[in-house]
Amino acid sequence: MCDYSLHAVATRPAEVGETIVTTTFRGTSTRGFASEADMSVAVCLLPGTELAFADNVRYDNRWIWTRTINSRVGKFGKIDPHIPDRHHDAIEFPDGKYVLVTQLVEGQRATVLQLPVTQPLGEREHKPQTIADRPTITRLPIG
Image (cartoon, rainbow, N blue to C red; front, side, top):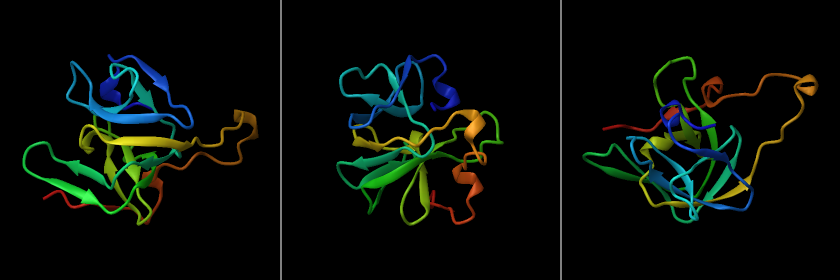
């Protein structure tokens, strides 16, 4: 999925094995993932997509500080999907913490390790879980 604020940006689904890069898309203030080959097209991830970053993940609030997470792997998901007009795309880390994709520092490279298993709608046993559905998530400090 691509966050609501990227509705005016060309998009395509992620592919296993490709390298994607964090970027701010032209004409928006939203950061997301793009292919190294075409930085103008947003690469959309499905909840459950697993990523391996080239370095420890860095995130910021765009004005004052940048922080680093001691992890290079994460899983894409959604947080607070019930709240409209807010960024929902996030990366969850093995320790249960998460960072909004729009807070990821630009220029970070990640490899798409695995896409989630998808089944035809009639074969699903239960609804997909979002990050917000999981009780163990803790927010990273903002200030």
